[in-house]
Image 1 (cartoon, rainbow, N blue to C red):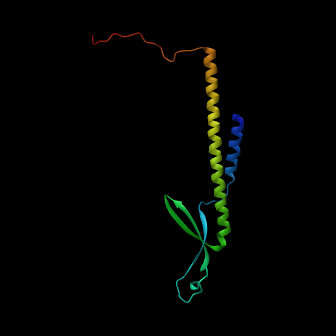
Image 2 (cartoon, helix red, strand yellow; image 1 turned 180 degrees about the vertical axis):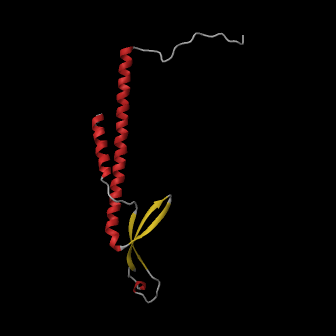
Image 3 (cartoon, helix red, strand yellow; image 1 turned 30 degrees about the vertical axis):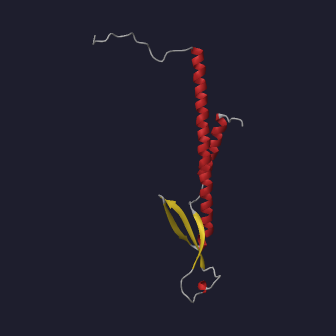
Length: 140
């Protein structure tokens, strides 16, 4: 695996940031198709093998550690599926951007460290502090 240059990493990060700017409407969660039984003994849903009334669609996702459920109307199911897919793409793009940014930060750090080491070799070793002469204790 070859290491990417700082310029390549900057380009990758810029492309990912530009991609995030074009994200459309999104929502997290899972869309579930549900059927239910009404409980009336004479209803068709009470017959063996009948799937029940439905489908009805529920969108569930976690909010502050609790599951939130919303009923989605039949005519909004396709749009909701697109919004969920957009959210998943957005999430993947954010993870990719963080990864690229982390690599870029590491590459810049390696570059500045290499530059510092080169300068230290050119100038020779220098002390970071000045040695003090020993002071006599006043307690003697």
